[in-house]
Length: 117
Image (cartoon, rainbow, N blue to C red):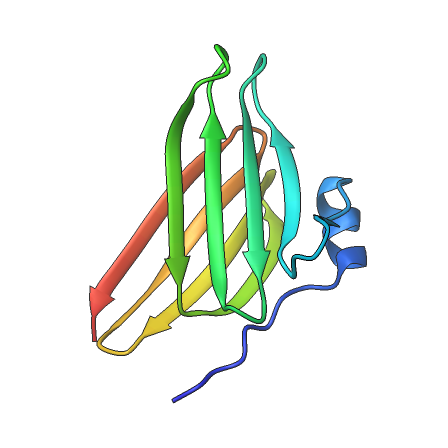
């Protein structure tokens, strides 16, 4: 069963993190650059048509040490609570469901759960 991937508006994202999602030529994915301590950063992209999310974490040496990709996204929210700003992405992939939390402030962190239903 097809489920729509519902995401916050660009304006909501700008209001929460001060970063405007961008697109690359001929691509439907939205891309956000998230800066961490020093030179580390996360290139976070999401595609509502493909219902997919990708997180590429680059360390301070400029080396990619995490490349995470998943399809089956159904919703994405951004919120700030107790001084922590996070993206929460919900996934439903047939037999499995879960949530990915990408903390963007004050530090970068990722927590992922995908479990059988």
